[in-house]
Amino acid sequence: MKAPILLLLFLAPVLSAQTAFPSLDADPRAAGFVRGVSSGARNAWQDLARAALWASSVNSGAAQEERAAGFYERVSAAAAELAAAPDLPSDPRARGEYVLTFIHRRFLKGYSEYQTRLDEIFVSGRYNCVSSAVLYLVLGMSAGLDIGGVMTKDHAFASVRTGGASIDVETTNPYGFDPGNRKDFHDGFGRTTGYAYVPARNYRDRAAINAVELVSLILSNRIADLERANRYAEAVPLAINRAALLNADSGAGASPPSNADRAAFFEDPRQDMMNRLFNYGAYLVRANRDDEAIAWAEYAGARYEDGERWQEFVYAAANNKLVRLIRARKISEARAALETLRPKLSDPNYRACDSMVLEAETADMVNGIKNPGDSQRALAFIEANGERLPEKIRTDFRDGAVLKEGERIGRTGDWRGAMNWMSASIERYGANSPFNSALRTFRQNVIGSLHNQFAALFNKRDYAGAKASVQKSLEEFPADAQLIRDLNMVNRVLEQSR
Image (tube, rainbow, N blue to C red; front, side, top):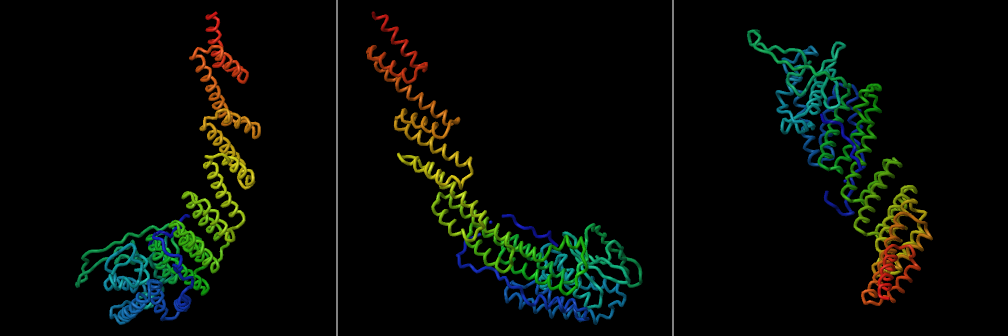
């Protein structure tokens, strides 16, 4: 048996929007199988065989189911062969060992970890712990044994009840009856010729399960195989049928009373089924088939309600779609998509998506500041929609727009205009480190331009003009060291020329 199926957290070729979703209808035969197996009738093994063949082929297509139905005749023939065997022991213990030897001699040819289906045994002889245990139960019940299943977290086997005791049967091994006891072999004269010994396995966590629950493991393992192969759509109907089988079994009263160990292995059938529904949806999301995922949530959620969980799934799919559009810089498409999705989202989830799209819209406007008027439009947009953005993000965008405008003005060579823009922005919004740094840079560029004017006059030996120029500059920037040095230099030259 394989490890329990795990729910995939929050992703295959893209199909058209017309792709049909998996069926949400349980096969009505499931309840009938349970009634037959749980009836306690002498022929209950026949219903168990039919149930196991159904679990092995259901939802595999009509041809596969028809083929599996034909294997029922093989099971019936094997049961008849057992019943007619002249050496079939009357003692339940010896009979249990005889049945194990019989199924290995007639059907079980080689162990295969993932071969969980009963019908495949009759095709290839390959088996695993589940398929071999199911076959043992079917033929053991036909031979009149009081028999059940046992499971651990990663294994399944059988148990024969006789004389108030239970005897383990490791059905994957032809010598697995009552493991831990030595089996002697004798020749025709009664002499011991050798022995086989199958060590007993120490299962700390084990639980008795009934025949229906053992059959359900066929479906569990098929589901695990399909999900491992990313065939999530095909796993959904199997999970629905498994839930129907186990729920019918519970209603029949066939299961043992509450058992903590057993509960650890058998997740609530409906919860396990819901996990498979969400796994299929998550697969669609991972494949970027977000619209199909949301349609699946509406389709399946209407049949199998779980409002909070389906809403979180829709939110995840919507978020995935919006992120893809935003990363592709299709911001307006993201806004249109969100408004289409709005009726499907709860208010908190819509607000979260709206904040994300608004952030992208604002970033797009701020990053696009290149021409006169762009910054004013961006700042007006931030002011108009600021309440829908967290304060820090709103402030960062505003500061970014201010700085981008200062850089835009500066790139035209108008450093004084850039300086004045930053001074006005500080007066309006308050000082901060980026604003102060930008203002210092623009100020130094203005002073650099004034120094260059002075230098051009000085180099032409227009010392009077150079002095007048630097004196005017110092009226605006009286403490600037460069301008003071310029004035001192021109004064020295003028004094020397007297």
